Length: 139
Image (tube, rainbow, N blue to C red):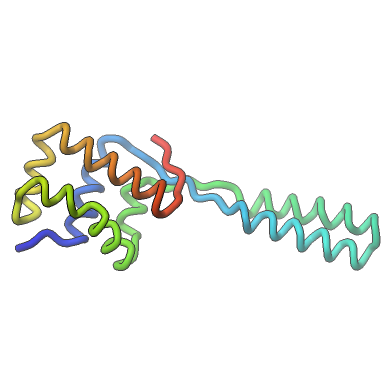
């Protein structure tokens, strides 16, 4: 049975369980938009004083609403939709081909016993998350 995208996600979640990487989910653009809307509404309703008050209220709301949250990488991987999993599978397919295995059990055994291969899978995953998905990963 050939290796699927779901198999790859399972393998990467197992590899990450030893390292505990986390994804930082931040909403900076949403926060700046909320601040701008607050300042605009305050300026229209109250003139210069309303602009200041609207900016403060909008900025405070944005800071409260848009604070960063950290999600464990293995949880993030399991919550990826099918298209994201398939794109990641295609991105990492050359690593799977290098292992020269035909099924998930053999791939898992190969990666579990080969520290260099495990490190390569993890490095390519982190590169994919940072470059392709533009996520912040901390470890």
